[in-house]
Length: 121
Image 1 (cartoon, rainbow, N blue to C red):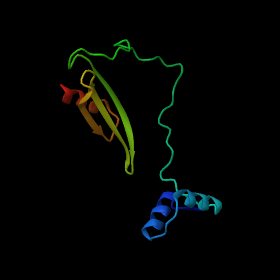
Image 2: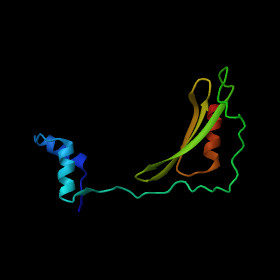
Image 3: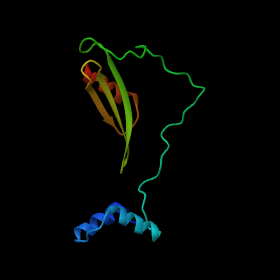
Image 4: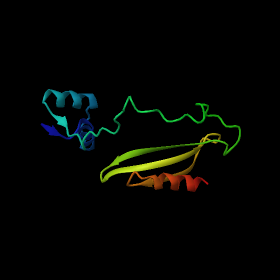
């Protein structure tokens, strides 16, 4: 049977004044066959292709800069939300180790990455 997870049950018991250890709640739920509901579905975000070419390493893996704005690196990631995926692009100054430009988008298109670069400039 799927119900609230041990964390929610434990917190509710504490609110109601019942002193119980979280591990006790976990053990009792396990013995009773109660499991917390898993929200959302597991999504496979990466499918690697061993035959695909690796991108060029233009900085020879030497991520060091002697002054600000000498070397920028970029990355983007995706974040699962209740309403779907959001994509975030970053431009980072290697010397300062600070984000100098970023953008968030609901679609994974080239223009939002370029917007992050434009903000950094």
